Image (cartoon, rainbow, N blue to C red):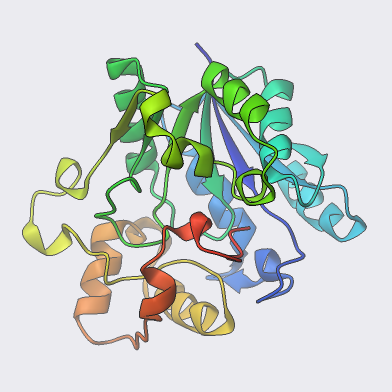
Length: 256
């Protein structure tokens, strides 16, 4: 059973163009996403799914430098791009990671993968019932179920946001949700949906740049980030309206 993490990313963000190559703590945002995803012990391989646009050659080159394979496909049909990347990597289980999550947690990825394997589910995530900060999103699903999703929908929103079909048709799949109390012992780290760690707009970049500058690499795990935010040594201005959605499932959200 081969577990493959597919990181979807592109340079053509409408809200923050070129955000994947913005520097955070001395490395580009995409470097953090790829390296942190690849650190998950239950992930056998990580592959970057980017677009065939010329501007995304930058991302392919960065992935190559890190020893990570790349699949390049359609910019709009993200579902098809992720599926094709998974096929190239011969994945049995797919871990979907959005490129706008530079603080993605390997431990949360491992919990999601382990849950899917232990429960024999079709789809596992931490966003059916959100209890983690936005930006720690992880989705894991079987290749077979994803093939069913691919065949079931031509809706532009469902093709663009990849996993909407799972979330809107849970009666057709066996699904599981992982929660923050499975990762954290202390209450101060649980149910912290008040914190947003996505790189979506310019304000997000300022906030994340502050986090990366104040925390050394070995400390950039969820607990340390939450502690830093709670210490009031960092400014935080959350857009509540944007946060209340389901990340990639928010209308017109840039999740790459």
